[in-house]
Image (spheres, helix red, strand yellow):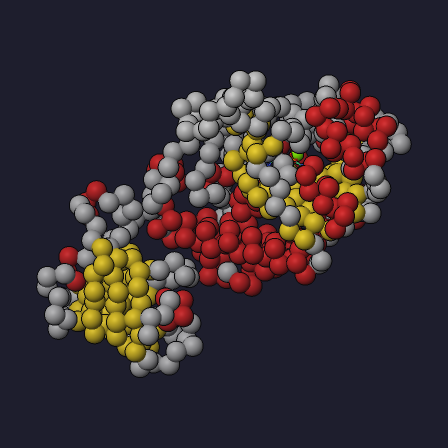
Length: 465
Ligand code: 4AD
Ligand code: MG
């Protein structure tokens, strides 16, 4: 029967079991004794399976000896306990059926040798064939699955918010405009009606920067909800932490305040880290060995450390007193820069930090104004080695205060009338946050650049594949 490499290597099948495995050649090595050893991967687990091909196979000379990295094949035979290292299993092949050859093996981009990450970004469509990107892909999947499981187990409903929108959810003007191609074969419109070729929605439409405003409506009916989907930001920041297209997880909780919000953020992160350590030990061990020595130990540290909470105003004092020369000087009222965040987390506290109550001027219009009237009930969760991983807030549930904030930010209330309805009809205190999924992947895998945390990165100047 056909089994995955993971199943074949798992020890669940006794030696002697006849099986077929299907996958792609990593390496081939030929011994003088008339045997070829083929490392075959199907991506189901970190390790490839070793297929032992004897020269008695009918296609040994014609085909087996021509196999190179990237060729696809089906190997059938018997599982046997490996001779050499450890306890593992290998496949003693009775037949090898080549499914797809690699044309021109010399120029095949994914040779069995180390490649630079920069090079692999240029062949992003082929990089999942490497050990590193196989591991990142599986871990990314497990993180996504763990997030859904966390919310499911805690009574949250997953809500799919729109990708095309007409509201700027962050009020920061970083949206991509959506338009149709003029030549698209759309129906001709009558005089006076909108020209759908130019103005499909009847007003300017954009790609969403956040599903928050939409999901708030569902929160104020279903109590505990979350989004998990792609978001888009046209910010011209060519950094190792920013993407133009990234995935975000946004829970929204009715009757919750900032304190409860921070508690959920901590609980969620700890749950997903525990899950990935239990379910992806082979991939995590690889990251610790090859990518970032502390990949596993820092997750364990994270799980065991209670998050520190620091008020923004106190954080500014700590930074000022640090004696550090920052590139951006700190002053009450400025937004914290990455260097400040990293100092707080890595040098001052040494574990994850939740910074709360930022100046109202630097935060979004929907955040709840505190009684001091100069700060809002905002929070950022800062992780060691990365900085901001989560941004969130208690929402402004009072219509008059919200209106004043929108006016202050120069936002047109007419655009947000539907959002104002939530305050007009049965408003309640509520809070939520946004977890940047790729920042989470970067943190867990110990990556240096967010472009390696998403299959096909979109950044200024790059949208290939
Ligand atoms: O802090 P942000 O902008 O918050 C919001 O969008 C809120 N609407 C969330 C909410 O309260 N529901 O973004 C949230 C997180 C950041 O902490 C960061 O992890 C990630 O999204 N993020 C990005 N990740 C990659 N590339 C970018 N350009 C990002 N911008 C934000
Ligand atoms: Mg933020």
